[in-house]
Length: 213
Image (cartoon, rainbow, N blue to C red; front, side, top):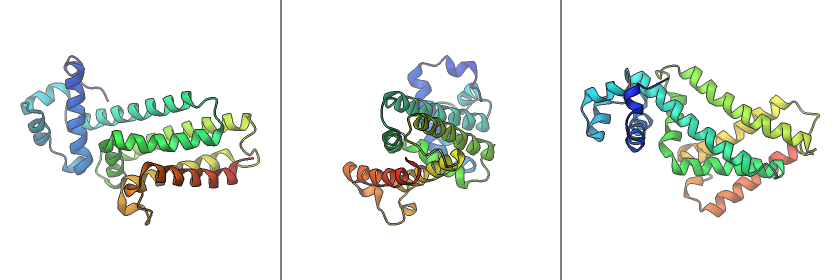
């Protein structure tokens, strides 16, 4: 979803402030509960100004979604590039830790993702969630295919099944890290970095025993 030309005419810092403020509102209250009035109040601009940048609330929400996905895409692209010479399971480990770091840097983006999972009223909810899962699947598929070429991943297992397993485990771990009531007693949100890395190492080790050669 595109913003209006007037939005792109704003200085980059102001664009970012508009997006971050709206992102915080949507992530805390969901699509239905989010208030344009509160967004413009925090920005210190007239309500009419926001409609010079976006057609309506829905177009703002969808633009923010694209903004968030692009940040995630850049993060994983960087991890993939930096680890291209590493063993497959180290790449998986680094990818999962990159997810932890991303939540620390962009807490409202991940909180918004969780809101979308449980809020049926969000516009195009099914399509947006499918897009996230497809992106994750494509990323993990590429890692596993390269791992197979290196002889590090089993060839007797269905690739789609392995990708589903990895996606489910990694997504669940990040949910547990970001949301205390979803962590099944691990208390990840209270752990030091070294303890989190130890859990990640254990998870990757278990995965490698299942799909590694």
